[in-house]
Amino acid sequence: MIKKRNLFTKKFAVKLLIVAVFSTLSSLNAFAVNDGPPSFSIKTPEPKAIPISNPFGASSKASIELPLPGSNQGSSIDLQTIPDDSELKEESSSIGFEVVPRVENLKTEAKSLDTIEISFDEISGVETYFVLYGTSKVETADDVYNMPPKDTEGKTSVQISNLEENVDYFFSVVAKANDDYSEFLSDEVSMKIDPSLLTIPEISSANAINNKFLKIEFSTMMDFSNLSEENFILKETFDDSSIEIHKFTITDDKTLTLRTSTLKSGFEYELEIKDIESKDQIELTNKSLTFRTEDLASLKEFEISEVNVLDFKGVEIIFNDEILKKDNIKENLNIVLKSNPNKIISIEDVLANPNDPTKFLLVLEGLTEDDYQILIQNVEGIDKGSASDSNKTKEFKGVNPHESNEGKEDTPVEIIEDKTSPADVRNLNARFIDEALINLEISFDPSVDLDDDLDKYELYFAKDSDSYFAYTQISKDQTDPIFIQDLDLDAEFYNIKVTAKDTNNNESTGSVFKLFLPETGPAGTLALLAMSILGSRRLTRKKD
Image (cartoon, rainbow, N blue to C red; front, side):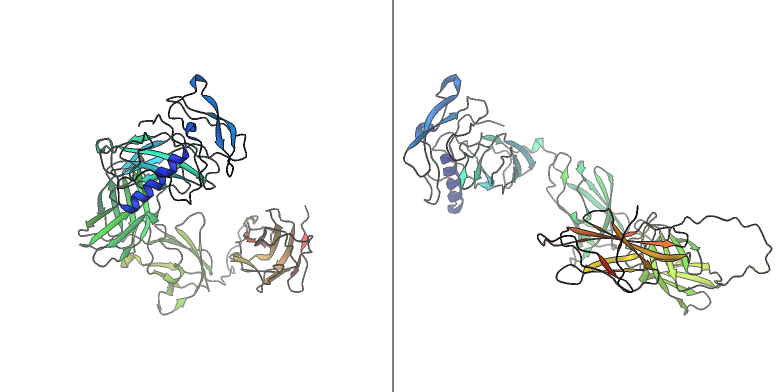
């Protein structure tokens, strides 16, 4: 990396910018230096203000005349110049216009066999920066950069591609703000791409482990920190049909495993990986790899490992793996009488266990003491794949909903205090029902009352915080929407929480819905909050 010792003014920088643009348009390697089109309005110092070297001695300061914009009269300002091998320290002008500072601390880094990244210090208030570069040094007013300038679009680092190996490239940067440019060009730095000094990352191999998993190996250690499923594209080369990437697992710094939709034996696939770098921050050069599968074993280890009957309406099922797609599990489960498979038991709801992704609670229309079968279809586990035909069913025995204790010997009964909170309400939703945004409709699906002890719901209300200041009680049989009227517009959002309470006063955690208001401007004082619930009851303040 070589620093340029000469300083050039913004007039020279803009000339280089114009020359580079016109050189690109005319397909020439160089263009004569000129003042550019008349549309460029440049505040230009007098010739003596261009410090090719330091003519002011060790003090490094001088008072020189610069023309005021729009005026023929000069004005004296203090300008600090740079001795060789030091940084430029510009002092503020005493006149009424700002000087766009010089770009400092240029750094270069080879990112691939044809790309160099340029980075530099940020200048506050700058609109954008232009990287001027070419294959020759720029040392005098007659020299030009012979490559097209690169607009960084306001960023302080930019990659320049389509460069050649083992060629010296020279770079300078100029800043632009308010249609003005840096008073001086930055130092010039140089770099060449030396392949022997780069460890270029490549996709070494892609091998299908079975019909659901693909192992990918890289030639060097990679940075997987920002990787997601969207970085991968996998398709058949025969018809370009896409293969889904459900999940990826990091084995080590050089190895990944992809969980895919079904792969076929003896087919050719193309894998593309986007936006990935090595640990040395060098981009993947060849981003795609074509491979062919051999005879693939089918991964069919998924099954229902356990069925627990909680009561005549509740059954817990436990799988041996986490479900791949949970959204459609209800549609792919069936419960039938073992003695009469045509008798289907309706599944009213399927609730995922928030603490264990392999467990689900099935809410049923009702069981008897008969034997039953659960059948699964089109359900896959993330690691276990699909279910074999023998693993698609699981038998269990129901319970008598009217089982009597008559005839049984009396035994001491241990009374256990009920401290179990009821389940939360589901699908809590809130929306405005008028253009004025002062009337609110709240709706939810009821709590699943497995213990048959649900007593009521409580609705809490808050404005611009999580501190609920108003609430009301709601009947457990409430099915119609609830309305809050005459809301205050002077708010950013409302917090609505609904909890379930049982007969032992155990209260659920609560389902919460946050409703944001669009910007509506200033509003009046806080209006009264009211609620239309079976007779327009008003919200009451919660007592501490």
